[in-house]
Image 1 (tube, one colour):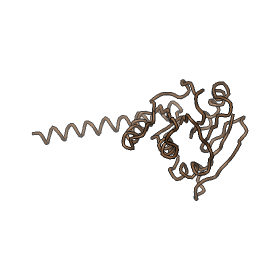
Image 2: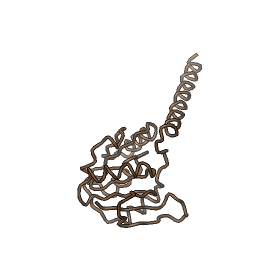
Image 3: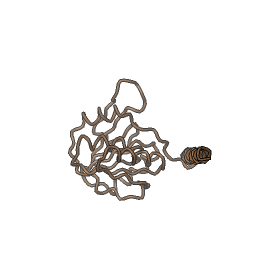
Image 4: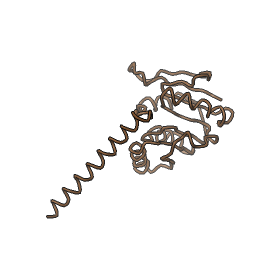
Length: 182
């Protein structure tokens, strides 16, 4: 009897999990959200070796599973790192990873367009062209002078690129890194 009840509970859990995954994917396509495509960890590690920064506060807009935040915090332990992720499943996965690594990282399940980003010294993002276009105005209005923006793959339309890197060994479209400074 207990085995049958456990089996039923497990099946219900799987159905709910699949439903959540379907709703996330449906929401991405219907609402035009950026799908969850994480920056490869090798690209993040290579980027962190190349850049010469010492920010006090780092934001990741669209933090996904928090991989950039985790890598940054490990390299720069005294830096305050904050991520915003609007999609539930990557957010939950990121929270689990942060707990597992026992790092002082704040990952918020919030829409970064509705958050004040004026405290950031450095911002990392891997978003689509439409989101970058929308962020341009937010960056102009909210970011402090000399704030650094690192964008994977997509540019800020009217901003001058300070540095550009093509990282990794493959010819992927996801390995172009653009660095800006306000």
